[in-house]
Length: 446
Image (cartoon, rainbow, N blue to C red; front, side, top):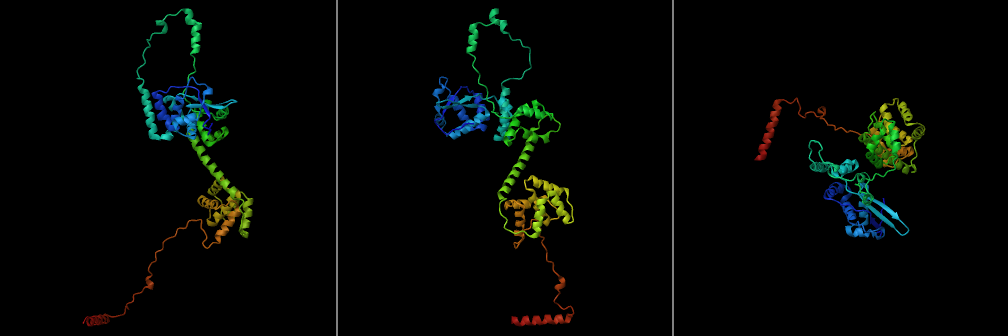
């Protein structure tokens, strides 16, 4: 892949091609979503810049293309690389003592049939335009192809042959004259082939075939799915052996490569590997941070054991101290923490802290504490224990476990709310009390 910022860089178009209406329709509707409008414009501009009378010494500078297309060199090279990738242009660099010349070789626009037969191009088009537009394009070109030929029942061929109509001397028919042979040679010009995607790779296909044959995968299956294999290897940066190792879990006695399942497995493993790299990188950056808190005697003893034992041994040590036992689910939690890229001694301290909050080691609590530590740049067991001690000295100690506060209704205690009326008062006393109240109200009204 070549690029330059020098507008005086010479370029030369090595061949000419004719672009017909059908080809232009394919270029615009199928290729333009992949290479962009500038890519289509550059392809057509290069076609029009071919001059059969020009030689290499007549090469022009790239500024000539800039003036014709009214765009930057950066945009031209971005589009050129896309044209190279889909196979519409082949670029080479000729160097001599005087100068360097970029040579563009143009290739024909393939037919719609050839385009849709190339799985990489078809998959990329579907990704670019979406499922509904892709289906519409496929139906359009399929219907158009069927319109050019009527499907009729095959009949007997009754066409006249050449020798039924014409007569030549026997010697001329068997061995053409020197003039005829010279004319044939003079008119033998190499055809310009259709575009093919540029699959330049350094993959050792013989190695791939030999290794996969051991798993009952035939060499023809590898050749048939070569484009998809290249795509997966390039996307995830895999070499031949790495691809085979990733694909192994998908082999179930079948002679075919299940590319969909292989892609899923590789994607899952890639995410976990990338996450592990990120965790290890962050831990490496924070390991040198000094510990300013003096650890308690209890934590110093825990630290000593955490550095001596494996995670399984340390968990067993903690559980037996508490009078419990380890479970299979707890061992799975430890295994997941190792796969996340955490160092063994830090995992041990993490298990210790988890068991200070709960009786069993659970994935949710372990991940919650581990995330808290990573966000606070904790990378070593010493830093983790110091962090726990410093947080425990705060007024409100943080609680990693979720507390569910229940609303309490305050019920009325009727034993403390006795009636104020004396239950021993008789009816005559109450009537006298009411009469006194009536007399007071009447006197106030007057």
